[in-house]
Image 1 (cartoon, rainbow, N blue to C red):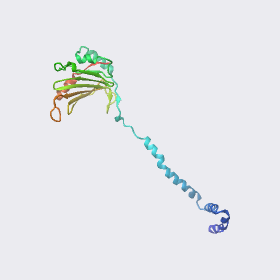
Image 2: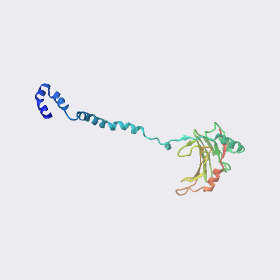
Image 3: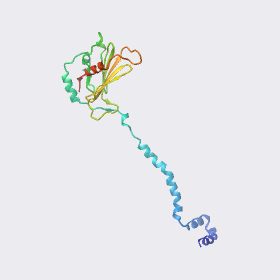
Image 4: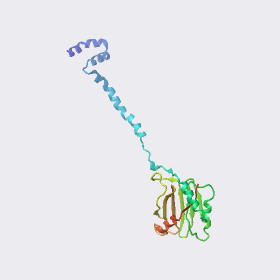
Length: 218
């Protein structure tokens, strides 16, 4: 019956025009809603990649280990230790008292025997993040570094860590944390043979590191 109606409408289509007739006939289908909605579904499918792309860019993580942060210094403990070491003297102690105090407690070695005439070569330099001190020697030079910058992993609230001996190509190093600040003592061999310098033993390096005392604080 539906086919007969369609054939009967052909002459009328000639009067309405092909476009109007096509719409009229399509409206007689079994499921017109499905046929009309198909173009909309395809359009939504095409837009999906564009909607998800900005979300992926916004979720890019920032890695904390790539950033440095400033340490919290225990100035109270440092001041108490400075007071107990007030009798310490020496050229390097005098130099460390000049100018404004660095942003970390100043720790310097005691009992260092300098070569004759080398007293004038002792250097102390405050820095924006700490300080460094240089002591010339016969077999090795000593450089003491202190900084309030934390680079890498450290448990929150860390104030002190054990001293660590580290052999290097130019000598050795001893690293540790005190008052919340990081300290590094470098032993630079004045004469080195072969690929790795060997001018100071681990026991001697740790002994010098143990001789460091706090001589200035804020």
